[in-house]
Length: 124
Length: 110
Image (cartoon, rainbow over all chains, first blue to last red; front, side, top):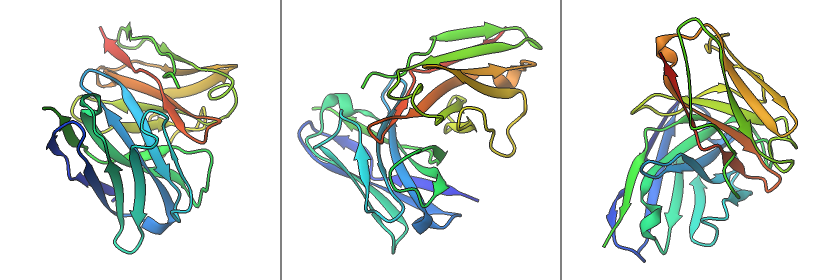
């Protein structure tokens, strides 16, 4: 079955960097776009970024544009989120999610299956 | 972009129907038939229950239905059951090629 497993979370200081990984199985990795979504304590879901199935197109939320970068390794079935200049308000559980539709380039994104999340705490 | 607007909480008795609204703008909900709904039980990952306004993934109960009018989408749960008690989130594709979530609605079964 479809499985997504996030890793790389932890406690970091403000201003530092962290890279999250998401290993997937149960579907053809190279056919689907992938998302990162987070949930801060006591808050709702916040979509962060998506990368198309072939990695050629990426889109991100204004709140993280210029600080967070989504990428993928289609040889190792792994999704990444590089997070730079972390702030205390980036503290959240970070989820990776598979898109519902194969071979989408730029539109109609629908996060479908989700991982269990990885906690990132930014604190001095 | 601001989150889509959902009521913080909605409640109903078993067997009743209830509706959760999700209001956006012409740049998201009103502009595209790409509204989704997710169910989230505590400690669990979100589960997609409706996409493209009114399509259910296989395995999702027919008690869940979606609709849209203008800039507002709605999720209706009919024949409310105890196991429907959860948080519900709407989302929409946007004109910025992004995804925007609602703030979430806590559904309580009385």
